[in-house]
Image (cartoon, rainbow over all chains, first blue to last red; front, side):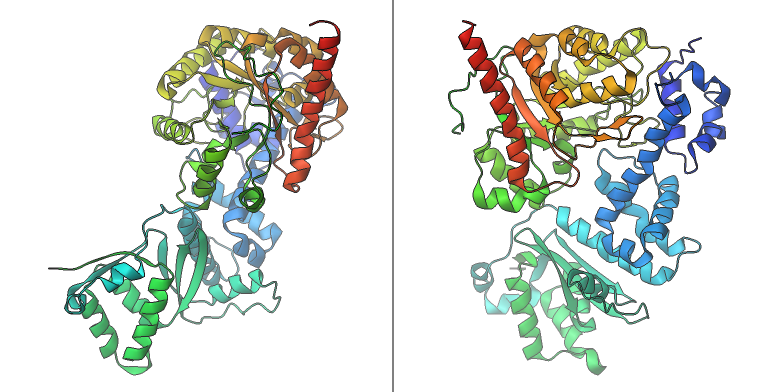
Length: 281
Length: 295
């Protein structure tokens, strides 16, 4: 006998089964599914096939859900998957999509909460390292998809009068992120890219990275602490004179010399890190 | 744009006069370097809408270059035309913007639902083929067509369950939907075959029941046979039975834009294109037969 559930109820039931983290039988028997359809009534809703029972047919959708989520997150977080291994990564995904299911039309947003999730996930090995690794991979994805903005070119730089540089503000391109990291995850990612199996150990080691896009390719630039601080100041809109002065007057090994600063700026402009320069007068 | 095969008939037989774009392939990122360096002789590209909606990076750059040189149609997977949640107007606004940007010949998505209560399963979940579902879906297709300012084109899905409550077969639902909602159809011949195996119907009956004048595009693809059922994986060459169904359908619709989909274990561009070009050989053979019989 057919049981015709109203369409909203049928969809609530089927979704609760499809996204359930357990087996299909557990999914059908879950409280969420039961709220819409008693497990024993499944045969009144889904027809059997020649070789498959109704629960096996629903199980096809249920089985594909987690694999699809895993594939999407592995695309954005390949180094994290490599570090954890296939099995642990799948279990991470299983837990993550229960806490943060997709609410977007695009899977590109699925991993938005993953860095924070791995930091707090119980039982995850080296959560600090995983957190940094996920932050780095997230920044790479964000830079990959960021809007394209104009790039400050040499002619624009040359057109700024020398006296105006003191109060000038440099605006980074949209496809630009800065990260201060506690673990050597940039080196880890690079070792994967280089197919170098001598990966850095997940021990604490402060490091700083700029992630940016140039000619539609994403780059990771290792920075000194001083360069990171300077770029952070500039990105926050601090006038160039103030930012450079702060960098020059920092004490200890972090203080760059003028020659070093010149080299940095040449490289940063050449790599297209800035989109504009504005002067006060 | 120079068609590779300019002698192919371009007469539009569908209700809206959408052109027969020839034989195309799906635009996939693994092929970007090949496309940008070779500008291969392809009649047209189908673009997965969602991959280009929220990016200002390389994918959009490549798409713009492709759309300058080739005809393009948009194909989506997240419209959720059968969802019982309200339509996502943010998504539809961006979709229209993308369609305008690349001068898409048409915009298609699937007869399915994708999620409810604000969630997206990113799957093409099956509809029950009931009068309630038909009313619901028809109203939404009309709304979407109005918002997009172009007729929506709906594709038949592959499915793995059938609902006891369905009161009509999928082909009847699709035909009635197209009529009531005044939409176009994207006939995925592989999906017909997959569902026919999974549900035990004659795929020829399905093909013969589709209103030919509403078909504006064909999809062809490979699948994965699991023994007890078939999964629509787009991971292989199309099997002979699918080509046979394509020929059968083509005899009813005449020249209609055809596209080969390959989404898993995607091989080199030339391999995908060669598979697509098999459709051309089928079409040419049918035209020769037709000509010999004075058709």
